[in-house]
Image (cartoon, rainbow, N blue to C red; front, top):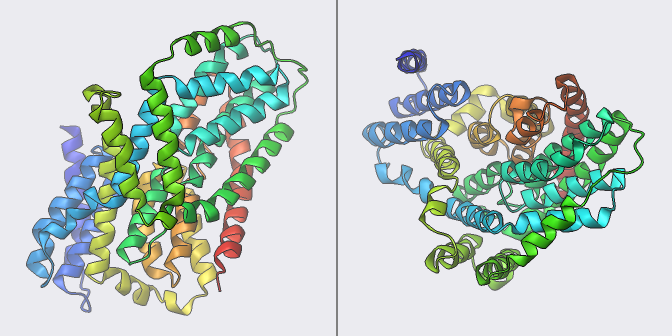
Amino acid sequence: MKKLLYFLIIFLISSIVLFLPITDLSRGEITTIFIFVLASLLWISEVIPLYITSFVILILEAFLLPHFMKGISAREFFYPFFSPVIVLFLGGFTISKGLHKFNIDKAITLKVISYVKGRPKLLIFSFMAITAFLSMWMSNTAATALMVGVILPVLERVKDKNYNIALLLAIAFGANIGGMGTPVGTPPNAIAIGILSEKGISIPFLEWMKNALPVSILLFLLTFLFLILLFPFSIEKIPLGESIESEIKKIEKKFSSHKMAVVVISIITVVLWLLSEWIKVSSSIVAILPIIAFFGFGILNLDDFSSLGWDILILMGGGLSLSHALEVTGVSEWIVKTMGLHNVSEIYVLMGFMAITILLTNFISNTTTAALILPLAVSVFKNPIVAGYVVAISASISMLLPVSTPPNAIVYSTRKIPLWSMIKAGIVVIIVSSIIVFFAIHTFLKIT
């Protein structure tokens, strides 16, 4: 009952937009602004589940906008919910599920750890690197949970508090940073690609990696260095014990044809994603391959299908649908003119969007942040590709608080990280990351 009351209050507050005396806007354009304001308040407040807000956006767009604007049909607002970008991410979720179900991700992790031989700095680097790598291809939440589950029994025997803090923060920050590198690494990347495709701008899988991966690697290396410096430790060897080796043997014994199929199909899919520009096959079409192979031949079952991140896909669809409404009704163009952004240096405009994105993403979901900011940023910036990259990557700089991102929450829940330690490290990483992202994209994409 309380949620219904809050929803009605937000709806009424948003409805004020409908009665504002804006003479240079049509009724359809004002209605679009109302939908945008309502979506923003619902997403930020989370009065109703985030994915349900996407359905609220859809029903309002499909029901109201065709009545007010000629040439607009209800069906075009449905298309983004199963756009090529959604299929691309669905394929990524499927690979992630396969790797996790057959403990392939865990096997990779344990194998690398066994080579570390308990060397403290190398162990931190390895855990951070594995988490970042896995987060490029699977849910960063799942990657973090896996890594924390593997290392927590070891850390129980480590008495150096600073070492525990540095290692756990390395896992969380590595998960956030790794997702920047690929289109399937995190939803903001896919939302940016989807919105740009609406403008007729195609960004192939490898093209995204060419521009984003160097930024991700540089942030990774600097973050590792900062954590070592911020939390100095004196321990010389980590007591891994025999549990790691026994776990590896246990996983290796459970060899199956299904496990081999997951490995082979996942590798083929990733290779085809990287070659999609040359073989002239869309990354989204390639993403259907693991879906058909895993579910069609019984490698994954109906329960696995049901547990895929459908809520994230629906949330992404809502963001893409909202972006389409802003574009086709002309609201985004009106915002540019009204705010006088055409008279402001593009550098300052980009910095403004970047600052807003980083601020929001540390308090609300990065997917929600991207869904709100990307439609505006891509519309008002003369070079929409630059805006897409900067906002999407900035949405992953969620390092400040436990609530900023699921990886942060998971490592904080171990009770081995004081809140101030996370904030201290988060502030340093956010400041440095902001500078690097801005100037790196400036260099790669030649902002003028």
